[in-house]
Length: 395
Image (cartoon, rainbow, N blue to C red; front, side):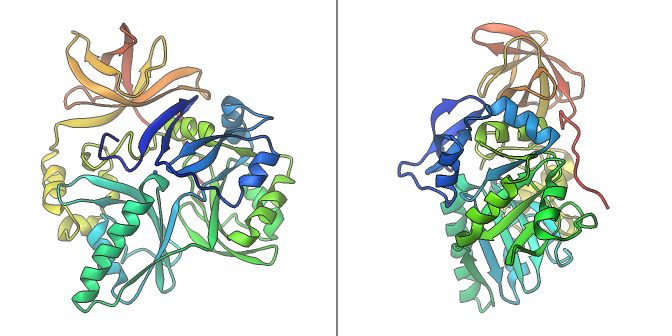
């Protein structure tokens, strides 16, 4: 996982990533390890986060992740646990996913919505035995937690059995890339070949119980590891002993997720964007479409039924210079029809790519458009996302 409604304020720009700061800086448990490897830091959502490392720039880290494996420190993200016999009914009031039907160990990408049908955040939810494990964006951490606690109190006052707790004693790292399975298998001494994408389970790593989810935000195979904070430095260090595994920062993470066609909250989706406009209708479960019951359901379901909304999120290939956020998108005739939300030179393609919102009717594949970049008009074309094929693990 914005305008004034975004969860964090834009600050200085670094290559390949939009930096955001809320003032005070916090550091993850891996901060000293990042320094040891020569990290250059920048502010993101109130945290000092690594951007690049001494041995690799953002481009090198990007390509290394696609070919081998990289570790991303994502400990700044919010981890919560929802318990109680009414946990599914409670959380389904706040998100669009079908949580009741998730098997134990199953995960789903879902959306927190508001009463106007907008997206308050995107989140990954895993069905655990007796609880729901929720991971959401760092930039929305305070807002999301307050939202969960507020609605939990409302449910509790109505007699519901539900509790929301912030997980504060675990850090989170993402091990991403085609060598990730082998690296983790060697460290944990187990076979992960039968663990499908978007599943999670507790794995003993060097005697430490860790929650391991086969997921990530790069388009590559990989894992997100929730590790007891007092063990995260040692386990991360052990993974780095594998010559195919290197640390990677936010610069590479942003270009990887954009090549994968994945949204960044506050840039590509925000509280004014509906699932229909964002092309995220697939996150709304079949049962949820029939029953509703989530915030903004009447607006969201009406848009789905009528293919409504005034705009659509699209992928663009752009000729000439890269188009960054807020660059205007024009029709072939010069009419303003949209705006870029994210854009980078794609290292895997050698081409400039972007996400944008355009008026309905201009969102069909191969539609010829133009983009205004620093007062220059450049050709662009609507293409299908992801820009780079995903390599998620299948069983």
